[in-house]
Amino acid sequence: MTTSERFIENPNGIIADSREKKQWLPKDSKQDLGDWKTYDEIAGYIQIMRQVYAGGHADWRMPTLDEAKKFYDASLTHKDFEGKDIHIDPKFVVGCAYWMWTSDLNDEGKAARLNLRNGEVDYKDKSEKNLNSTRLVRNA
Image (cartoon, rainbow, N blue to C red):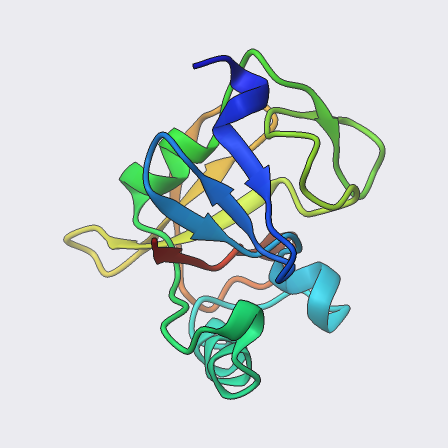
């Protein structure tokens, strides 16, 4: 499967990952809500997207770290909100955040996030807001 065949834009507005059998929203929380969000504030975003049945589904969630790592693809180039290169499929809406919260927590209770510019992972306090966003996913 070529990279261009992996992500498929669906008529219902979601993007299917045919390799990983996941469905992703085309925008991240910053693009949808217009503001950075703490880890805990993402719960409100998830609730909104479940209530509006984004793409016809009500089971949207924050991605795991493993899912986020598979979403990142160093062979692809797209632009983030600062116009800098990130490595996700260009089928997703341009201008997203480059830090992506995941649902994984470490032993200190800090949340894992993935840098879409370079694929690096770090753990931040869940109250950290600046530059943090997420993109919701569901199992296909």
